[in-house]
Every structure is written in structure tokens, then in C-alpha cells.
Length: 588
Image 1 (cartoon, rainbow, N blue to C red):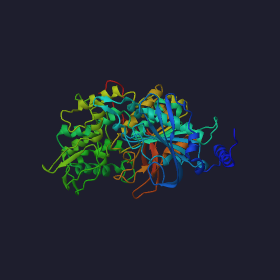
Image 2: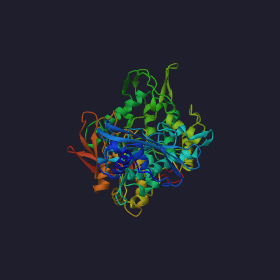
Image 3: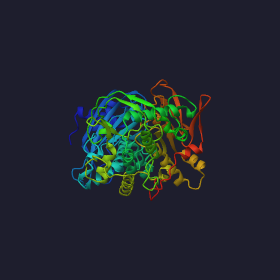
Image 4: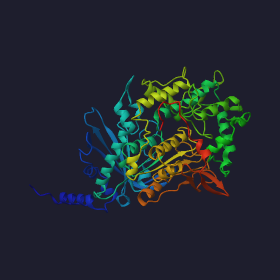
């Protein structure tokens, strides 16, 4: 065998140095050949084959992110890596994964998986910086749907009446398990971590990304050290059908309010309930007190006025979330019919026998699901079917891919039946509400679960319901307070005052938002610093930059002498608890 030339010998030596030296630079390691050499073994996961020929890498220096919602604005450098893998025996199968790797000098023995929203299994590049800035490898998956920009709904229906169940499983939970299993082993290989060196694994996501996070904790508890989860879209059939509930309220009551009229009701609610927590700052921090003490009927007769608006762009099945039609100038006074719509929406879905089936949004949330559209021919406001709710029925209930053009014949009982049928069919995939988290708890896992109190897309009570379900299932012999204290040792729920859906709220700009959740979680997991309250910052409005603390459920905030306290108020807590006696099985 001929000895290698001097140049080849130098190359081999340099590669060996990069493979073992802790002082390697980002440029040194962010190469296709180096990444290939660090891929997990081909039989690492039974039934999966990694494709080394698909590896791509590029170094990004001094990237900046001003997200400001889930992590502070920052500048950072990273290695952008993608590759593909396939499931053995599936013809044409390919799943893409993307990992952002920090500079070796800034790696902190951490891995982070990130999630998506709506039918998207990833959030593009919006979430990945939140891992790199904390010294973590951050991962995202395309779920095998065709590309990172292809959503699950585009791949889930094979033909009318036939779901692609492999896509359903991937979207439900499987893709994220594979992302983390591959990502964690690749992280170990890439940074030459010894077998006994601890790699901390985290998850961060909101909305659908929150549901994806719970899908992992509930099934693979010992795979995770911690998760920061916001407004999860679990109980999928209930959650998605619930978007149509407000439409059926307007149909049933026979009144289609102008958007400006409903906005006036919200504005008056904020004004009336602002100070109920003891601090007048333009934020409803206690929607429970608002429900107990504010009569929506007091808004009847209040004048409203809104200027005309132009149409905004967008298209597709989720039209309402992506665009808006032009609206004329609106002027009038709040009617009793509009107030009745508001009251019914807040009360939540009940069947024809008056039994509670599900819950709705908190008092003070915008009535985004009360969608109406202006008919310029008749000069009247008419029903506009909610896009997310309609797509759920078309895709996963009717399985024909045709959106509901109207809701003719649909009643409260119809919505109930859709919810329960989905509960039966998708209980093991999309519902994601398994309440026994014993494996995760026994493995030492920690969860920070947060939800905007003025969420207009996923009811805040949904998160309360799940937290309470975990408490009752895991601590059945303890009193309510003792069970709550035991659960808070490892799983904490925070209701964010005034916040909307996974974001701040322009109607309550002085509300705080917890943008450092991952740092708080890291301190809890790695240093044992258990949060008592959740750190938050006012990100807009006249108090921008001010630090606030958020109370851990079931404690609620109250201001006394300009100082916030976290109080236990049973009457307020009771407003969050629903007897869902319209459903024949427990709804966790």
C-alpha cells in the first residue's frame, strides 16, 4: 500500500485535530465532510436510514434576531446543517431535518427541539435562534411533508375519503421523536461528548408547537429534561371544532355583528375590568374577576365608530388567518343582540339539553372567531365561516378536502358530535391530553407551561383543564392545595395577563410577556433554581422594558399598595373549572 502524500497526510492530521480538539472553530467543523463523519450509525434507529449524500452545511456569522417574544433580541453565529432520512419500506419517503449548531466555544451541552403552528410542524427559522443563543443545538423537522414550508394538511389526504395515516402519525408525534433522537445523538457526535457527559435536552414551542411538545412529554418522558410550552393546541378535535362555535352562535341567534361593534364590547370590557386586580394599567390581569363582577349588558347603547379599511393580501385554506377583506366605515351603537352573541361565546359550547361540552375564551379576549363579512350588494354583514374550523371538518372529519362554504344545518349538537367523533378517531394521535406524566416526572423533567389570558384562538381554560387533570390523576389522595404544591415542584402553569395567542396584545400593550422562559427553565433544570413566579417583560406600550412577575397557577395576581401579591382565591379559581357533562367520557 502506497503511503499518502504530504498534502494528504496534512489533511488527515487536520481532520483528526478537528475531530478531537475542543478548540476547533465554527468554520473548521461546519463542513459537509465533518458533518457526515458525525452522523449517527445507520442502524441507530430501527427502520430509519440516514442519507449522508443529502448533508448540506453553511456558516452564518453575526446573524441578528429581534424576535422579542420568546427570546431577547441578539446577535449570534451558527452552522446551518440539513440532511434527510427515510423510513425503510416506504416508497418515495424522505424526511428533512435542520439543525443550527453554535460555535464550539459557546456550546453548553444542550439540545433544543422546536415546533410549529397551525398545520405547520415547524416555525421556519423563527424559533431556532432561541436555542443557539443559549448554547444549544436547535432542531426543526419538515415531518416528511415535502419541504420545510409544506404543511401537514397539504400531505394528509391521499384521496377523498382516504387519509395518509403515516403523515398523520408523523404530524401527531413521530416526526418530533425522530428529530430529537437523531438530533441528540448527532449533537453528541458533533461536539465529541463522552458517554458519561450529560446532554440536556429541551423543547420549546407554542400553539401547535405546544401540542407537539406535549406529544413528546406524554409519550417519551425520559427523553426530556425540560420543556417551555405555550398555549398548546391539545384536545385537537375539540380545539379545532371550537373555532366554529362562534359562527354557530351568530347563526343560532340570527345576528351577524359588524367587527367594530364586537371591538367596542372588548374595549369597554378592558376599561371596566382593568382595575379589578388593584392596578390600573390598561390590562385585565384577572379575567376571572371580570367574569364575576362585570355585566356585559352595561355596554348596550355605547357608540362605536371605525374607519374603512382596505383588503390585505393572502390566500389559501386559512384565509382568515392570512388576509382580510376590505370593510366599509362602521358606525352605530352596541345592540343587545351583539351583547348576547358575546355572552354566548364566552359561556362556551352547550348541547341542546344545556349540558356543557367545551369552553371558550375569557372575558376581555377579542372575538376573532365571530367572523362576519360585508356584502356590498345587500349592505349587510353576513356569516364568514372560520377557516381553521372549516378545514378541520373538511380534512379530518369529512375527509374530502373541501372547505365548508356555509354552515347550513349545523347546530350546537353537530359541533358536539364532531368533537366526540374526533376524540374517538384521533385519541392516540392528535388529542394529546394524556394526564399521567409519571415517566417524565420520575426522570426529573420540568415544565414551564404558559398561556395568554386573553388568547383569542386557544381558550386559556384549556391549559387550566389539563394542569388540573394532571394534578387530579397524579395526586389523587392529596388535598387540592397540597396536590397543587406537589405538582408545582416540577410542572408549573402561568396565565399571562393581557397576552393574546402566543404573543403580546395590542389592545393591552402594557401587559408583560415571558420572553426568557428557556433561560428560566435551564436554571431550574441545571441549577435547581425553581421559579416561584415567572419572569416577564413589558415589550410595548408606555411601560416598555419594565420587569414584571407572573403568578403560578392556581395563585392569582392582586396589587396592594403598588406591590403585586399572588393570592389564593377559591371563588376566582372556580370560574376556570367546567363540568363537561355533555361529553360521555372524561375530558382531560
